Image 1 (cartoon, rainbow, N blue to C red):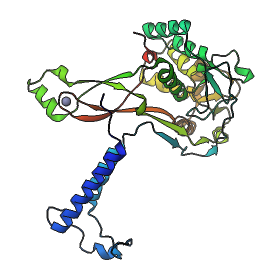
Image 2: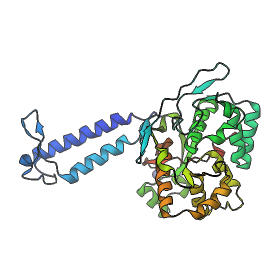
Image 3: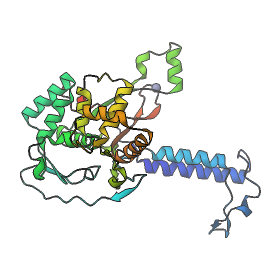
Image 4: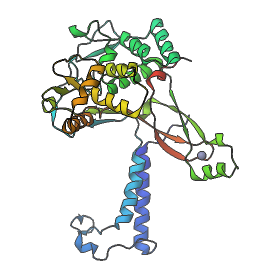
Length: 352
Ligand SMILES: [Zn+2]
């Protein structure tokens, strides 16, 4: 397998090339988009080497350089990122946890940093044969229920209220996906296969002209651990700002996803999915444990301002989690492209 070059090196090399090119063009005085003539006087920053202001670079050229650098920097191996809510926020206290001997691993840090849970630690046991049976069932029937059960079976926490609860159902959607990654990478140890199509223009034209078979456009890529980017919540949305007369906002849990999928009207239609999204983001004050079906009924009374607040909350409360980008190369034409891997939880832990 080819190990990709460190993208920072690639970015630095490209930057050097561009700077060299730029300097050469400057000294040649040709082939260069015109530099603003009065630039030397108009720019404030002083070049310490010459004691004179830096010349202003043609904006088009600067844009081109910046775009190239950004493109090269886009792919980062195993990166983490901290995201801050745009709305009012509160700091998240570090989640304390006590190592336990009877489980294999403690997850000290979820992407949400436990900001939305009563429990503040999560332990992961090992998948054993009965769990693999459930995973297999999930894969064959394409049902989330078996997957959530299998994952719940290996999760535990010391919080007394969650001793008998299937914990995976009480995780937020991004945290659940992150746990899936964790399990997959640490226990299943298989790569995820990403299938996509070459977007190289010349290659596509050749197929269109009948010079190459359409199948040559198919790209199959093995996703590795190094390509996962995790966004961690830097601060939590200030929940006191999302308290209203009859309801408050809350984060959608896997439980909501399950309820939405089991709902008799769950046809995948866009408007129903929209309603489910809104319903999963609220808690009715008079009925805090209301089912999603009840909340779907309740949200019919919401007005535009309410929806606006719910929408702002959604932005701030779901921006964290794992993201997978892969850089794929077409084996036929060598075209390189970047694509985001979309996960289907039901086939996430396949047993072939
Ligand atoms: Zn190609």
